[in-house]
Image (cartoon, rainbow, N blue to C red; front, side, top):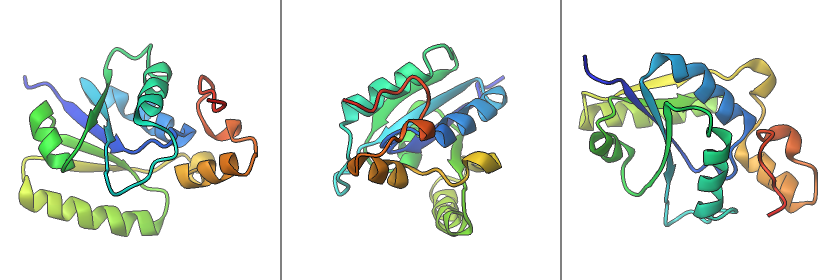
Length: 155
């Protein structure tokens, strides 16, 4: 039987409790989940790639089915390179759905063998996103309620 590998792509700038929850809830569905930190040259990240990778490895250190990787280019090309047939995406809002649906439909045209799976967050985490967390941090607020417990934002 072919190994079921999923890619969970994102910038994870920083990882939030929402990201963590989605990954943990989908873990039973796959043999391996690769958390893929996209390197987007047109996007200015708040935290370094190395810091984001370190945090993700800390959060999932006790999950043998989780691997952390970085990539550039199209997510579907990375999926092919990793032999992944699934892309995991979280949907918080209807705007997320419309945006992600368009990407998934175009990915399906380019790589019909790869399925995108949309996961809804649990209601208590649906308002959390990395943009808001970064804004809290930039303005000296306490963002610890929004990120996994092992994350030290004072770096």
